[in-house]
Length: 272
Image (cartoon, rainbow, N blue to C red; front, side, top):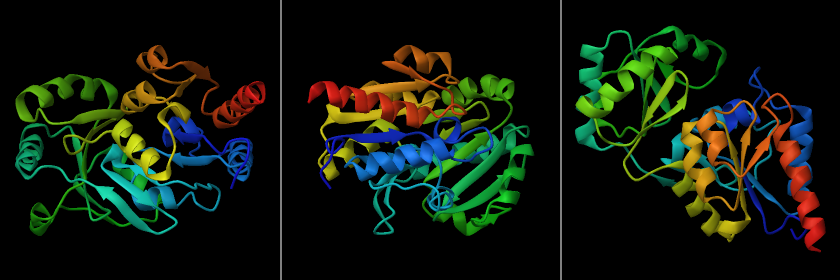
């Protein structure tokens, strides 16, 4: 569909960006996204979440471009209900997770395989699954070690992860891992990231890099903000994210996506 936004792709992080503190999409943002799409724009998300964790929002979230999931390890087309791209953690890196289990009993561990969550070690954050409908197994069966893993989460309070993250990176696994929040360190395959997933997806749907608008709040969003044509950090973002973003948007509780679409409309008007 041709329209005022037909050349643009808007890519948003989910948690603490698109979603408010109650993990909901505000009516203001929902209406703005629908308006953007009806006027030719392409909208999607780039997130550490899994397929079903994004699909759960579909009744109130309209996306019309493939989503970047697991911090770039999977690109998923919800219209066709299939993966466009996925890359799994290297087999030799799995032993680092076993060592973390043995050496760091304070750290929660979750393994994501075949879009099922395997809770290797429970922690306080595991309770978040009680309100969610996707499949969770509270163990790591032996056969899962032979299955492909798309992501592992190391979980702990911020101070705990701040302490153990550098140890993990230097003494356990120097492969790709990125903080997706205060309490989460996401381990994914080498060579994947939100920016690579976003650029590959944009190329597939015919959007030029300078027409990509990206918005986020945390360390795992930095790479996509750096390569987007226009980048935004929400007001509640980490300071390091704000420093590299082109623009600042209201907080995740303040209609950030609606604000960005409104600003883009003003830009488009001045160009016509």
